[in-house]
Image 1 (tube, rainbow, N blue to C red):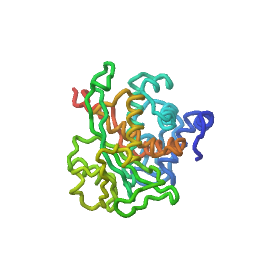
Image 2: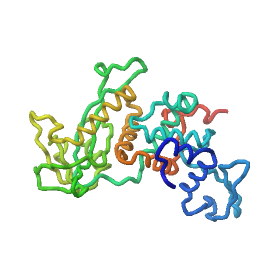
Image 3: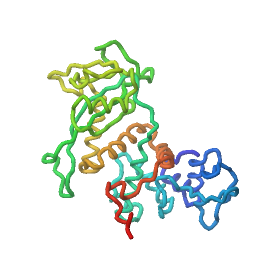
Image 4: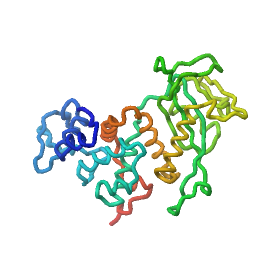
Length: 323
């Protein structure tokens, strides 16, 4: 199915519930319906409940949204699609208040939609960074309360980032001899995460989770990198020189991330920092084909384990075990 390139095309392509159901059906069962209970393929759609399909062999009824981020959602699929379109194509992201106005839903519903879609932006099967990768750390202010946010008086959290260095002529990430300059390059994919401190344990955990072994790492020579095994370390001495001169691409990503977090969200909270950082990474890595990211986002949504409101706010559901 072709990606909607404009708002008018999007509205035409997903004008009603039926078109959204057809899209989800192809995403969930690209080779045709398969019963999760018996594995057979014969089925019938229930006209009274258009999201429900019944296996003609075992009688199992399966909702097209079961086991997805839309699990047990009573919202129309058109609302989910509209929210995904706004969040994936808007260059600066969407606040829950903006979604509330655009979708005509309550703030709690808009916040829940946004949080579930943000969690769908992280693909657990994504490929690690490779080739040549710049790595560094930075600090950003975080929000603690709902009062007016003043970045100068806020606490700081440490963000570590990594970015692939891509040669413009070959469009590949190729290692060079140690201490060689990487000229005529551009940034490739990035990864960001909040870490507790600048210790070797925190930094190595991030690298092992996001960078392929054998990759050349361009760093500022911080002592936490010295004991790293399985990677080709190419430290750059910063000295009195500005870090963005030595490691230009990761600091450009940091600059964009800081402006985005302060400009759009007026400061991130520690509790959900990694979720918002993954949103930035998702959008940055698809900056050249933003409109296609809508289909990617919905495809990822269909592969996610259901997340409840109580999971998102990290509290126990008071209704569980009641009575």
